[in-house]
Length: 93
Image (cartoon, rainbow, N blue to C red):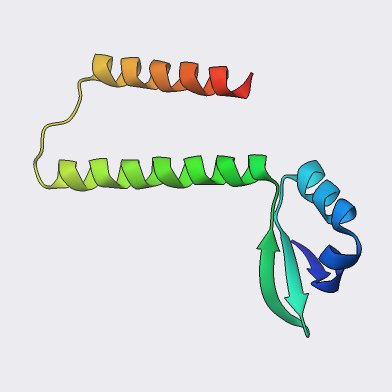
């Protein structure tokens, strides 16, 4: 965990931005010794948002399955996964 005082963002924005980009980790900013803000680069934020969305979708599917709703066959699931991987690969480029 990377922790810096909140004054660091005002005094040395470029250093904080470089830490975020280099480590792909959020930087926790403190104010008067207490946690105040979290800063991260945009790529890391977008990855985390996609991961949260995927987890939300998976939870929804599992809840539906537990309530007896029909799901996808193995071949449909493979096709969906291949499409998702293709889209992600295209977004990375």
